[in-house]
Figure 1 (cartoon, rainbow, N blue to C red):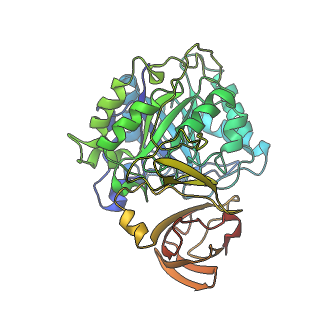
Figure 2: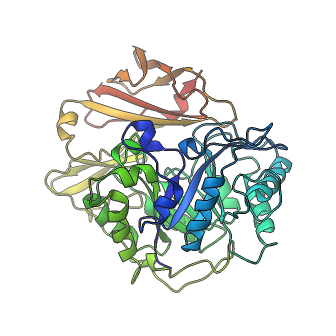
Figure 3: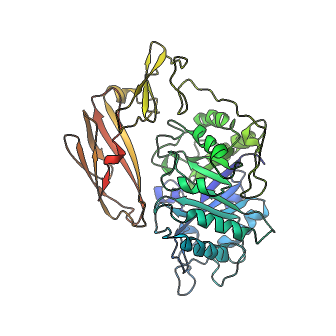
Length: 473
């Protein structure tokens, strides 16, 4: 099979941002812009009892009597219709909001069996989708720690093996900074069929210092399943994420480059409501992008040269990756004198180092201890740098199951000659290098928190605050 178009569905992201509205699951499956649907989310585990599920407007208020578990017969019909067209339907666990996680491996075993009875080929009087059997589960774990998830995946694999009538899948949605703070040890320790890496809301986005090469090395070197596929996770519209969206004209050359990696498996999109309502490309972003993605199915890594023959089994391939080239050093480059730069290129970054363009060659420098370098990918922002202004995003995730709450105080230490001037949804106070942010958190039940800051610096290079100094109260 060639590279796939994976659409997350269920949270009505377009409706939440006012940019459109979510259509039925079946509507998206009728389109060539969707090969796989990931329904989102089971957002409360309730170990030993019935979990909670949120599908926004698609299934609202129709609970099984005496429970908080949704009964969704219309969605069940659409699931069967999707599968009849050869399209896979997965269910995602976690998300940015909710209360989930395991205290120990016993919790993980219990929950895996619960999901199998409710959504797999099991039996229960409270099956949200009736006799429809899902094709697997996705882990979008954004908080609560990594305890138990390896055991959870291994237990799912054992349950899958009891049903030979179809192929089941386990996928994950780590964020692009490597390794993912929560899922890193999980995808290292258990066999996944694919990872839908979120290349947005972070420095390593498609609009920044894309690190697909790092994930490709993980897939072929560390992953227990050497046939695991890495998908390029992107926002479906400018409103779908805080940062990282780029249009199809900019995205297409990136896809042509990353499709050279044998681990490349396609594109995953947050979410269907956004990508189909986005008309920047004709007839919409989802279907226009699908034409590009599906055209990458021959002569490269996206062409299925390294599929896993069965879920969780490794396969081998004689395929050799070409070395994608770029005029800028990537995260794997060493900033040697062979890395030439051209007029208009002034700085670039690779995590703990930065480089300045000096007479047509990149000169490498190390960042001060405890700091990192963020690549400024906005080609229109050279003026902003000349005026010594910057915008900074910080993603924070709890490693326990407690949400952040409605009011959050964040303290950090910034570099000399740096001033934080504003934060979205809150106030700033700064004394010397010590900064205190008071945030009004609308997503008070979330275990994840995104901060958007603006500031000024007198330095030619912007140094991000040392994450070790961040404190949340």
